[in-house]
Image 1 (cartoon, rainbow, N blue to C red):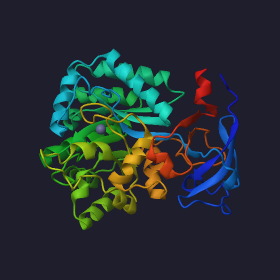
Image 2 (cartoon, rainbow, N blue to C red):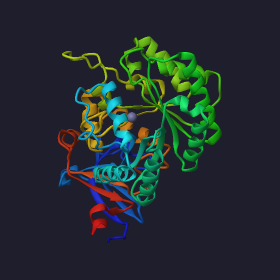
Image 3 (tube, rainbow, N blue to C red):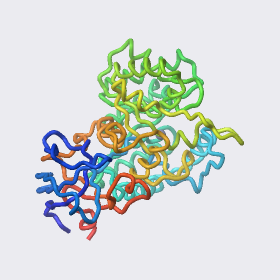
Length: 417
Ligand SMILES: [Zn+2]
């Protein structure tokens, strides 16, 4: 095993990921915003950046930081074959998910999560936030399996867990106890706010959940408005609650899909209020595209999706996540951030050669997850790198590229030996 933690490489690097400490003013930048650089590292940290002649770059390589997945479900990944949802509806997913949960075991969760982590590591991820179904007989064994894996994988992957329960559960005695255990292991409180619901009861549940999270110092990550009806109904209730209380813990709104169905002026006003309350958003285009607005023999042309660009314009941090992988909620996917970027190009009009098109997969994802390193490249950054065999963004996204992963200065392949 190589433990020198030093090396050098030449590659195209997105200029938007280089900080001012790296002088690229005289660089010949491609139309896609890529700079040709020689980057060296020592003791697991980047130490030098040198502009090189673009013509001598061979083979063609594109360099990224290792990436972060802000929204996954490791406990149910790879359950599609045994619990399919062939009509691909939200209701069908709920039913199949419920059935699967009745037979969930510690070993099953462990095997599926481990398979997920191996794929994620090789595909270039360094951190993942996963929601964990936390109501019902499999709750304790799921958490035991996942926390054990977290200890084993700490060198390779930073893992965050969100306890996923109906939001009213946080107002019960069992919910309070669960929150205490989640706080002890550094987890977050989660929940689902999807219409139709009683607005008053929903506000009460949200208020109690927010108070509990704030008291325990836990972040919050909600599945909110994953729906094609009642545009932004959940967000509006959350904002009403936040208008009347002061919360210091970070709050993430995952999905926020139906907000995209509002008229432009309403989107803009809501986005401003979300920015005011420092809400983060994780948009999940793949599952939204598959599950929402589904009707027999009708192709939906209007698709619920978080209005990513408008939220960014208002100053909201927006990340994009992969969500479900081969489970009743989504039949495909394999924890590949490059595939997610490729799909997001048509689904969300996010182009990685634009700063705000790349941020949801890099710096914004790290910010939503409160990671210590945002994934920008400068002297002193961790040598956590993802090297793609591609000479341009278009080539990198056309087919999943071959890649090399460097973890704290060591090449992953060397570490295998
Ligand atoms: Zn989810």
